[in-house]
Length: 293
Ligand SMILES: *[C@@H]1O[C@H](CO)[C@@H](O)[C@H](O)[C@H]1NC(C)=O
Ligand SMILES: *[C@@H]1O[C@H](CO)[C@@H](O)[C@H](O)[C@H]1NC(C)=O
Image: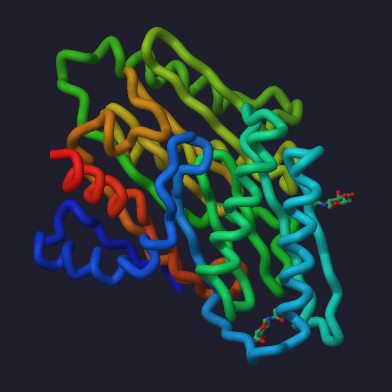
């Protein structure tokens, strides 16, 4: 099954409002935040529903609780909680961004856990990415498994043709963070002038898989966002963020007035389990605009 891709930029406004209406019950769960690390990026829940009161739910709670306690001392960890049958085993991991202070990692994971617990209640799996951290759990093991499925891709407004200098810098920075010297570097940053890029692998991947994942993400960023002023590509096991200028990760909407090309990707399959990824930042941006102007 291949992922279905729908491009919002080509969606008529009426359809867009309809889409936003659908997202409304979810967007209400996203509390306004001032700190950028807990900005919402995406969420997806497994299509498998649990029967209420199943022992699996207790195991999910236990995994989510473990995320929170472990994040007070570690930026990554994985957990496996066996259930009465193999299909009731819960696998989970969380990953904080390499630049996040321990206290922020802990706060980020706590918020991600409480959100995913609410949004994906009753599902056998959930994955939620905030700006600063990722939490994911499922009853199919995905730990240590490479997965380059595109979960989210968004591009800023295009840079004018006169800015070829910046484009060259952009290429250089992406080349730098994408370069592999064989050593294990799950978190990478690079900058040149006003251009900056950040890359992060989920640390269940080894050095080779991490490198492979980042190469794919960078390739996608170049091919899909081309000459955009900023762009993010989130694959299941790594992401790359790129920006030129004063754009910050928390200000995709605020700093850049026009989101030229925002893409919502409805995932076909993640590790054999279908999930739907909903991109809410756009909704947040629209609300901000409605409020601010
Ligand atoms: C996960 O749980 C769902 C719901 O109980 C079940 O249908 C599915 O087969 C399970 N997946 C695996 C890999 O065990
Ligand atoms: C999961 O965690 C265990 C213990 O913390 C560690 O030894 C193992 O390497 C981890 N596995 C992955 C895939 O990260």
